[in-house]
Image (tube, rainbow, N blue to C red; front, side, top):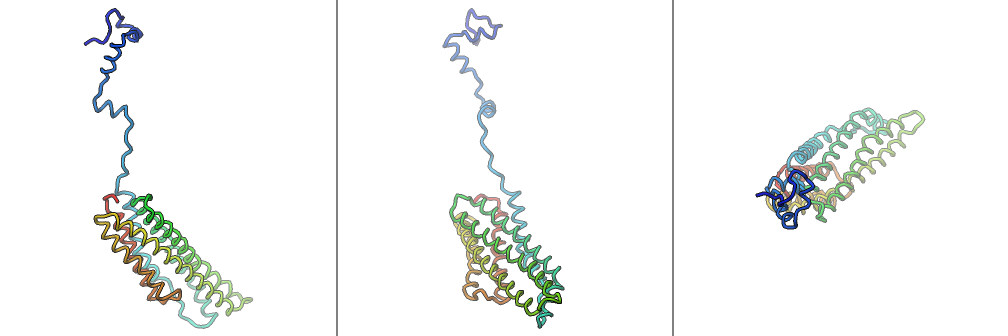
Length: 266
């Protein structure tokens, strides 16, 4: 049907503007209403972020850091000599290995924190448990960075400085002991904060349902274990207690990696 009113000049575009009200209404109804036209003119909805790629990279980094961190800690040389000067010489001699181990540990801490942050974003920052968990874990990661930096760099520097002829080796040994107390204090606070964050995030996983419910239950047990060890052993923990904490943290980190690897939404 023709939309041009009678008497109008169809070849003149302006003549179409002089149509009657009825003709104008007809012309409006003649606009194509196909799905293609509507998809072109209407605002397009923002596509959901695809699950997989970035989260799986974070999961792989987290699993790698959780595994290698225990291996690297075992490579850190121990001082097994007696006497103030002998201790200082042993610490200074192994300074390069000591620094390398702690540089690697710092990298692992960052990889684990990145994985935890990725899990928090996946679970949703609107959840109070997730927000609290990320804050607590982030504070614990910062404390652990302080501990590894102090132990890997400041302690060897103290040993090297007090080996000078003008310094007293006994005073240097006392300085190293004070540094060890600082490192252990940083690590203790870090384990406590990270465990609080792990408990909160495991609670959020438990509330997600599906396969994540099982991961959340495992995470609750693994996250609570370091807190129990800290409560029983106190700040002066032996090697077995430290290894136990590292192993339970590895279980929780692998739990987070598994939750990130899954493609289903939280």
